[in-house]
Length: 388
Ligand SMILES: [Zn+2]
Image (cartoon, rainbow, N blue to C red; front, side, top):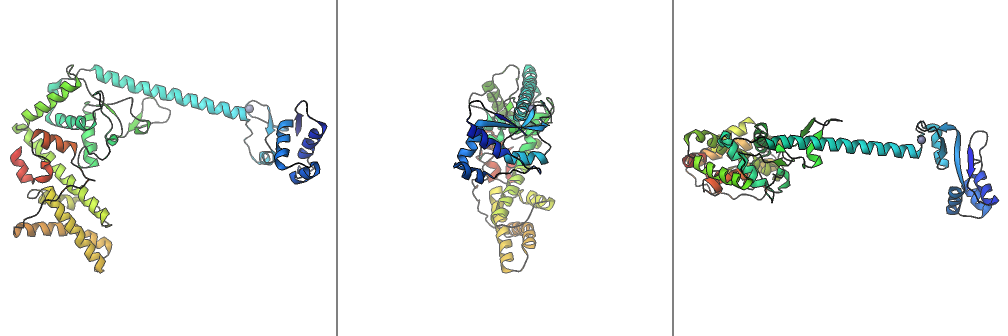
């Protein structure tokens, strides 16, 4: 232990420091802080301040492994700890190391940003041919644009930035829509996407995975069309081609898929609301697909709610366990719908709930193009076929 005193200190101060750091043969401190305070008639704060101002305590044997300067003990606890720990890197070296790492991280982030900028530039430099777009490409693009276009029409905001709005009736379907556009090179990740939306592979500048619903997108360049012209053209084209026979199948598939996803979402919502225990599988999909031919989603809401309420009743009576009662829901829904058809019930249309709003895909198809407000919710598939 090596004490280095500050200049201009009194003999008394020097003595306090020496006594404070004095060790016996077993390397234990001879004087407690309390004894020193009593002896010199000072309090703990005054003692600490004197020690801090008047001396530095170096180790004779321990060095900083990086700069080899002797280790400086911060206090007695530090002295005791240093005997047991292997890390004796000095404060300055630790600080330098942190700074170095921060600079490297910053350089890496700049390179990654540059990589995204280059990809975006190369995407925008390619002039795509508008006539190569399929009917589905156009429908999907217009839905995404309607939902996420920025105020200045220069980019598409992330889907998750539009709170309480939906691109399609379900997350899976929305992911499929975005994948379709991305894999067909119709949208590109914007370099201005949030940090949280992209997971870079460690230390890589060109390898990453990303969250489809969290990234921001760049709109492609079609035959030099300005964005507003492009949107107008999309709308006009979809309107004109919606009755083409070749588009019927694509449209019907969307009707069917959307209606199914609307029912599955409502079922999940109700199962959570009634605190039941069920996850939909193939049978559920089969039953909904069947019912949706004759009933609108707004009517299937009734069957779903009734099925869940019956399950709760059975469970509350103690007839069934919660799991067993939950498993009866789909059977109930199927039987109810069959009876309704057989006995010609008039099933009232239910309203949407605020948690499951009309999706943008539905708004584009029904409200904008077919002029049937929320048609995918209010009509059965057999009725919808007549519109397309
Ligand atoms: Zn050092």
